[in-house]
Length: 176
Image 1: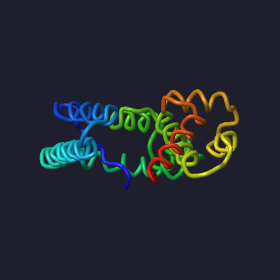
Image 2 (image 1 turned 120 degrees about the horizontal axis):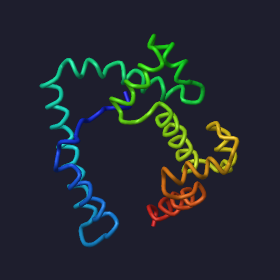
Image 3 (image 1 turned 90 degrees about the vertical axis):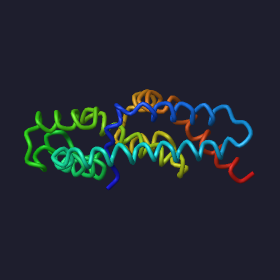
Image 4 (image 1 turned 90 degrees about the horizontal axis):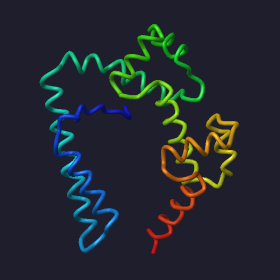
């Protein structure tokens, strides 16, 4: 229930709206918040059009995506313990088929999806707890703190420490 796959690669407006939204976000000026809200409405409206088009023009395609959504839900719940082989067994697929299916429908490999689940969990813990960074790394399955830092920085563009500091700063500014 946490995934909708939008095939928006042919939509020319969405990247433009996202770029403009980011420009507005990083270069704030008069009425920036209202303009950002408007771009969000435009982006979601375009995504709705993409979704409607996909739904009306390819019922068989959406039926083919049904198992992928189940698989993604399964991975979200079991990212700490599942492997490609155990997930393939769970869904009665051959591991190679499952790997290809995931890659074809999400443009990400099985291991990338697991990594993203772990890093997302780490970011939530960094924002909402005082658990030390090494404790968070252990909790999401990384015993090597350097590897955790490397992967976290690759994905978020900042170290876990900087991420926590930035989220605290944002929280403080909300209350000012």
